[in-house]
Image (cartoon, rainbow, N blue to C red):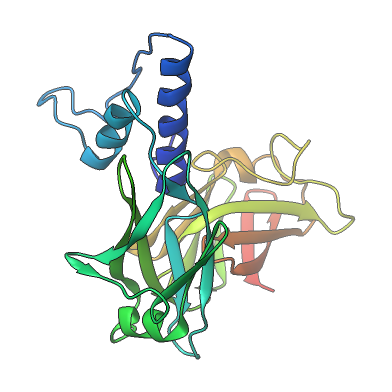
Length: 261
């Protein structure tokens, strides 16, 4: 599986909960990995924070939140944003940026299980508001591993027209600080397109593959080869910020065209 197919925070929450449940049920767990997470040659973890979360779950619980990122717009006013705290039996102790504690009331509020960062705090954390991660803060709890929250500056991604073949279509993509989460594909009549047509959602890495470093999204032969000829397919790209970007592809023989829509 592509390492970017699942938001990192969701992976951390899964292993935190799995470790706790295994400990509570007195079960032994085993890590089965193809080298994606553990370097087999050096025996070093590629993501030490992931292993720290797993190891902590052997003895205690950690608090988490509904997301590990807050996206703030680069080109418009920044508003307050909220996350839901998952205390998991811990107590919330506050927010920190490095060694600096954020000020309750001024920078954030907590009501029940809802953590809200103020517009003023997010504007300050966004800094020059250039695209990407601008600050990382920690939600600390009475025990366990602190929960990291990235403040990310972004604008809605922009795609461009493209031509390709049934083997591959490379779509020029300006990610503009955002990250692709998933892709839907439907024909004009509303029916699902592509492989596994029992769902409109297509498989990350097998049907589509984003490459932010090279500003592209590639549609694969598995996806394109399964499309009906001369039947336009509407794609909806879902990004982690919540942005939705639509696109249209049409296969005619071995030729494929992609257009913005």
